[in-house]
Length: 421
Image (cartoon, rainbow, N blue to C red; front, side, top):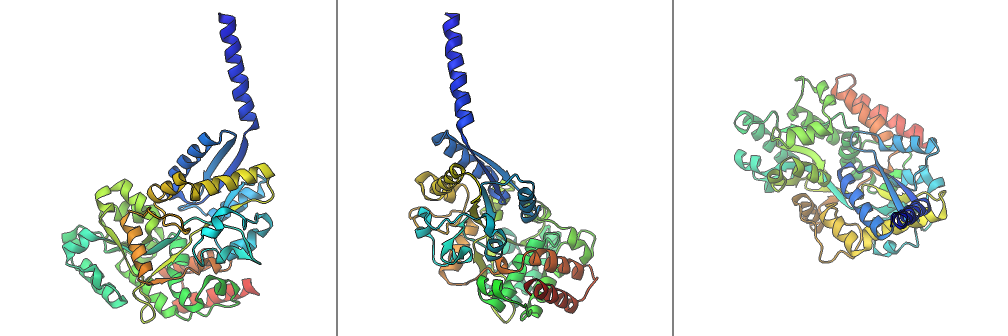
């Protein structure tokens, strides 16, 4: 009997070992920290249905530089099968590694325009993560206690008036400041905030990508938005220079989620973080416009944050497994249910009828979209590194008092032109 048992166990071991050895390994290197856990959950579900595939996920994002980490990963020779690209500049930078995805089933489901930034000579190189929007997220309860009607905040002047009310009532409302400005996060300042001005200068991401020069046509209006957040922002050491120490975690997880500020410049991706801290607060938040004074004052930027790309230099079996996983995630019934209800994504593909985002930030973004009060994302068309390493760094120097605004503009113009020569 014992001999028979050992024989059966040996066969089970050999079978398991053979499955492990024959499994197709797909390394995924992705940036979205907010959805790390649910992506890993989706991968587990996919592997249960596809035991011959193993998905290994590594996430680098938030306060870490995904682009630098990705370059380091490739330089080490440990190239992932699936990775992320951001738009036309990334497509140009990574073209030698990009698989043509034009024949994938999801391509025909893509909404108009969402593939423009990853299309070259008619070939499509990226699957859009989702659509996202950002603006000034506000605490509805604090606004109500302060006697502020968010419906009337459709201009720069109305926003200033609201922040004045919050400033005057800080003590009663228990606020450290009206707003939290995370100047340490150069993607918040150099990419997202600057986009409000440069979307008006360039119009669309491809025009930005092809531009040999940047004029700062709306530089003064951008300065107003920077100064606004600096003047009303929480300053750890009481000085504007100390704004450069405020990071994402301090802004979202600490100051906003604990009710110590009433307003933050962020997007719908922060919903899960806020909900994890305070579920009651998470259902009482909304998005106000990011007003560019005298230009466009009642709208928010909406766009595709990143795209999934497949490494064309990997083995055929790895590439096919990668494509099948991405297709399952975005077009299967289970994948779509997870995209809406667990990832909390606003889809960039059609075919999600009957499924609707339920969190208040996603609902607000849909309302702005339906009212056509959106502006395009152009920061994916900036020269590589310009938004964060040049503009973001110059904004930090400006806040620290090391350079004037005019010097900031001249520095950034020169760097843009040098790269695009």
